[in-house]
Length: 394
Image 1 (cartoon, rainbow, N blue to C red):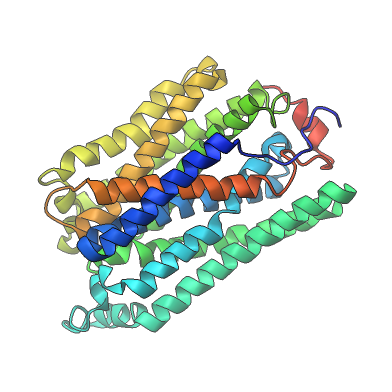
Image 2 (cartoon, rainbow, N blue to C red; image 1 turned 180 degrees about the horizontal axis):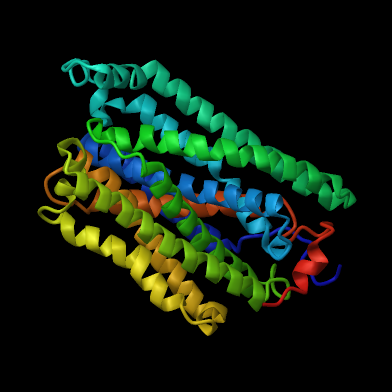
């Protein structure tokens, strides 16, 4: 197959040096923050780690969905979400470091927080948020995601060597199992790692809300990486406007889905008016948090909707890149709003700790992603469905 790029992706030395510099800024900021502003530093650490984890999980989920549904249009660009899934280990290690080094970021880790009160709900919270059980669950979620990602990516690469369709069939079966496990583990992980920051608050739709934001930002990252690979060569002549158009439709759809879930959560909590539930939104509607809450809706829902509504916009590379960038910024605001009002309180804070850790996250994630892209050809050259994908037009 002479149109698919067979060589692995390599990063230009200037780009690599820039990412290394950003990662170094993040590392220096983290070390200084441990001693100067530990709460803000570790809150930013969680923000960066959870944000990056979402992109990795979105990549793995995208690959699994397309295996299960038998979709062939995405085969040509499949190595991009596969590489995104290859970043999971780094994100999970970062989250593990937080849990072990600074557990007091979660107020429930203190002995007195859950000791007061009676009733079955409080008793269950004491059981569920016991530290050993919390860490055991985190290890279980991580193991499931890492093992599934490694197995799917390994089989995809083995197919590069022999072109055997049995690797596709094996990945179809594994993907079906993963998607079931993913729905459960992501929901519980979002409860554990984000919702428990405000342990008195609860929302049964919180897991779906996290999935919507996670997958939307993952699609945005996929679009930017694919466009970069097309411009620099590895996917030139491989990705076409049909692929870009379908990615744009998915980004538009999940922007609408995210907005729908956001409204569903807010409306139901506002309507029932239960103090334990409304406290979450009341805090985010006061002081300086309210403009950020509105910005969150605009970046994740409103702008992508109007930018990508027209057919030609979804086939225009610059428009798609801008829309993807807006969504990635919106996801940062979304995760920020899930963490900082609970941990920092008062008014929003954005300074050297948040900026330094975010820049470090961009640099570190970029290096890990580039390394994952470099472990295999830029396109699955021996996949039986690659030819159909290369001919795909919409």
